[in-house]
Image (tube, rainbow, N blue to C red):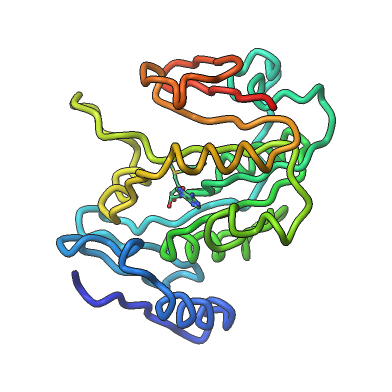
Length: 234
Ligand SMILES: C[S@@+](CC[C@H](N)C(=O)[O-])C[C@H]1O[C@@H](n2cnc3c(N)ncnc32)[C@H](O)[C@@H]1O
């Protein structure tokens, strides 16, 4: 693993520099990229990116604007799983990743708190939110660690990394880089059992469309083309 570099210039926001120092110190071996991973965090053009030598451009998250909500929203599998009768709800996005799903749930009109446990991804998110018009609240670590700090959410949304596929088509750039960073989630069932004890209404889990249902106990499933949303009501 090359040394992680974070090139700083006079335009780098101070809070990012401080976060970087704090997180690098706190990173556990579990969240470190594997030894053969190469790449570094790089500051350039007023934004933070992850530069992977295999890609020409760094990976930069863009959360600058809320996405447009599609007209046929009620038939979208994701929106149907989130549901909740058009009421504004408190949602915890347990697996923030690129932040796109958090932003979409905000665009649906919900209040979103988002959680990310990988320090490099967390920093990229912090930077993107600094530039966002409608930032959501972001917290470092697992949402389970925050259960005594905040009121219980109506819904927890959980989108762990999909298992590796045998077929040739490559996942999109972010997910290829996430995999190289060693982001493979293997604690899903443990997480789901704990999350079910926190929620007021439902847990929604994103899975590959053909994958088995976790714990065999979901209330309803909403399949899309490549992903499926499994809903567990309490
Ligand atoms: C598949 S990605 C999520 C993609 C996301 N829904 C999006 O819109 O980009 C999974 C992310 O969740 C993070 N993650 C997985 N399990 C987590 C947990 N229990 N707590 C916090 N973050 C988690 C991983 O580090 C990774 O960044």
